[in-house]
Length: 230
Length: 324
Image (tube, rainbow over all chains, first blue to last red; front, top):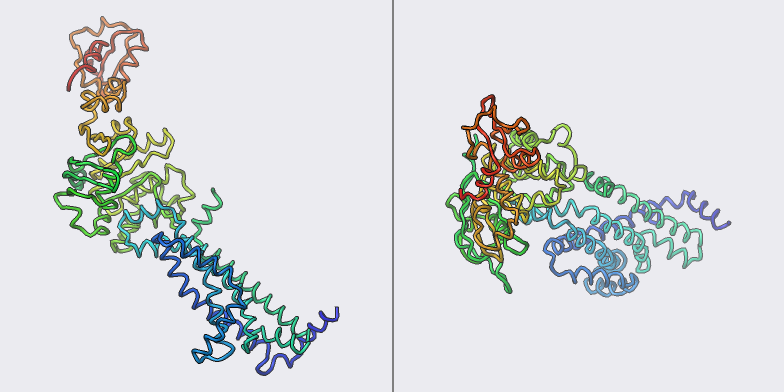
């Protein structure tokens, strides 16, 4: 009970909205880190996944990347990223966390892009080719729009993972909402810890809802009708 | 502007060999411009492979395919395909696009102006019997099987191709819809003058639609002839069996009362009053049924108001046996 009240009090304390440890600053850092990680991961995963799905070759790559991705603990990734970031002269905090988050975000996007492009009805693709669409046009006009619901679902999974895991950045002296959790734990200030956990959870839910809404908006009504009819 | 538009399609000793089998073996045939050629045969006979070599979805191992004398292998595949209509059994409409977007596919690839595309799409809707107001903005999943097939034909004809390839287009619709789509295809084809290559395994469909029918077996062309000739003179036992033991009856379905040897010397007044009255356009098959059902051995043929003579069972029998 008192923890709940303490946390509420922590949130209304004006001091927590000032300086380098301000809530809005931490949220911004968290979102900045997550967004950049997502952007980099998407730039790697989506072209590869869609291309593999288009050609239908190297299915084992897509499947294995997904399996490895699921097996790797995020904390281990961070441990691997740390010496790498040092070696590259990137220091602590932001960069090693980013390096750890990118491989975490890739698997769901790569797998879904692959499966989405692969699952497009072969007859649809054959008739597209038979009407004189080039391979790139088939990918752009047919496969990507039809794979879009799955691609976006993969991005949603990745984004939620990334937002939740970006918290670990605080372990290597990074910013973001993880700061409250790690510091709260270290200083035994449980109101701060609980507030940080709450903020991360809210942010993750927000990302989930936003992607879900975008998914529905971006899906062609023709596909929604198909789902409703059959 | 009918019949001007079609192109001649010629297969010259075309062979398609896969590692372990020959799909098409030395196919040579010519489809005259503006005609419908039906490729028919059991599965594995090479009919679909032959069709797909025309638009290079499959590349021949050897031989040449010429459209109006131009070798398709010398053309850029995507350019070639934009000038050849293509319809498959599952239609392959793009599910994420509306029907009018689907129909506009090839004109868009060809870079037509928006006004020209819109005008053509509207024209195509009425050509295939779809109300543009009702169907243009719908998605494929909202259409029945028959409506989807019509949309598929409209899409294939969008850029006025001289040749249209159809791979069992009516295989997945029910018999009543199929028959209607067949009649409309004939109407559209005559109207547009497009050369059509049409694959089916249904011999009745082949006889109904074909100006010429190519019977294939094991990758080889067994017989290539107009339907009437196919029924009258099957090249071998395989063709005879394939066209069916009722081929005499099927053949009567292609012949009309007006084309039979009517006996005009019989006085109409002397004919049995129960005798059915037949129009010259009636098929001999229908006439035979009418005669058998009427307990009369004779039918009175009247064209317009004129009495043309009588048709007897013996005459029909002679037509079955006749060579022409």
